[in-house]
Length: 219
Image (cartoon, rainbow, N blue to C red; front, side, top):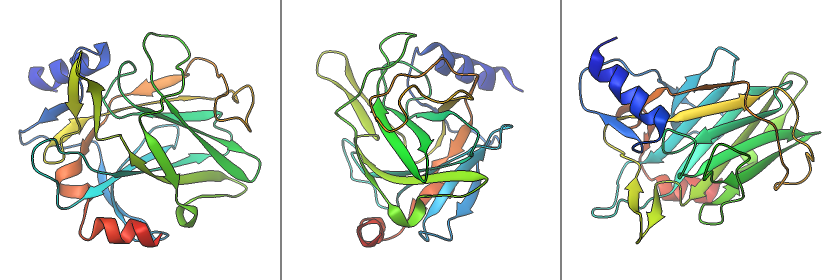
């Protein structure tokens, strides 16, 4: 691995910057994936635990602030306690999407961490769960959700950070094998992660969808 790639991943892990774009000819960790349930194209990464995190974005991105809706799909083995996704590539000060199974349902919780402890709820990222891409069976659970507020975060005091839709970006995941404390409650507390990672997603080449707004409206 080249020094520049090591530095980018180390910086993201420490939370010193948010998502680190790579504009070089390195291979991303993600692969292109077309979901048979929703018809959306995703940039998808699967961990060694068998959990897949997938991101879909619009093909046409607004100029300027680059505020746009995103879609996150998580597919995990049924014995995973919870799975989390960090839109900024590290645990703190960026939107976190936490999901877990609850019987025949899947619960999604919007969180943000201000330190290395159980993250509180985060009201600035709003989600709409897509029933077409959400289900539970004997071996896996899957959830698909549209997020408004996951492409840009921050405030006037600390500044704003944007998800870069054009280049490869280092994002982050974590998961825990133990169930959350109150599975039916989106505000439930849960234990520390058993593993985490910082894969590079190729959003610009794998995740873009033409007619994105009309497609997700129909789901």
